[in-house]
Each structure stands twice: as C-alpha cells, then as structure tokens.
Length: 154
Picture (spheres, rainbow, N blue to C red):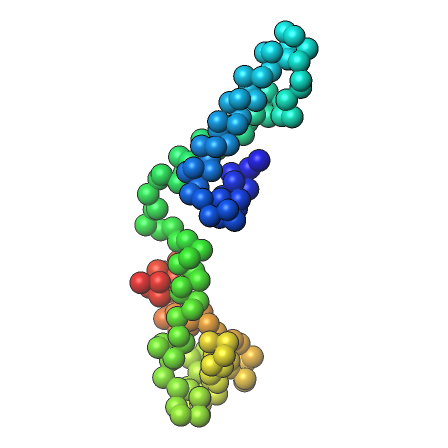
C-alpha cells in the first residue's frame, strides 16, 4: 500500500493520517516477523513478501518525514490554488452594472470583457480568452503563477 493510499483511506474512515501510518507500520512489522517462522517451519505464507514489506516501510517513513518538513516559501499547496481560483473575480476587475469591463488582454476602447457570475470568470469575446482570478493577475499584472496564487490565497 502506497502512502497516498493510506492517506486516502485515513480520510475515508475519518482517522488521523499519523494514526493510519502507525497502524500500517505495525502490520508490516508483523508481516516481517512472520517470515522467519515460515522459512524455518514451513508455516503459513504471509500475503506480503519480506522485501515488499520493507519497501512499504521505507516509503511510509519517507512520507512521514516529508509531512514534518516546513513548507518552503516558494511552494504552494492544492488548497492555496483552490482558494486563489475561488477568489471573486469582481474583486480584481471593476465591471459596470451590465457586467462589462475594459479588457486588459488587448487595447480596448469600449468594454468587451464580460463577467460570468456563475463560473466566476471573465471572458473577452474579441480575442476569445477566459480568465479566472489567477489568470487576471498573471496576464494583467505580469505575476508568476506561484506569486498570483500566494497573493490571492492570503
């Protein structure tokens, strides 16, 4: 079982990830302990091979170590990306009462950027581009994806 599978099962059963990892480690250690008895006495064959159990133990320990590391400043999480995309686009672009604004993706004399309230997007019909909140900061303000996500996720 891979660490991401342990994480998925922990979420499904509503238990802490650390507890789920500890349970799997105990199980794997029991499997490893069964192998000498099988070799010496010809007992019941464990479902996992000894080396497979060692590989899983190593993967879980590496996963736990990664979870303990602090998030680097240049890293972003899936939660941050989702929060950034969920930022209301009208907080970044001033639309008139008809839901139109001047486009920032090309020279625009009359409003051609339309606001899609349901999708939380803006669409420019002349050039065919659609923008969510992250896209606005990237195209209008020249930010990188990481900087835009960090800015919006605050």
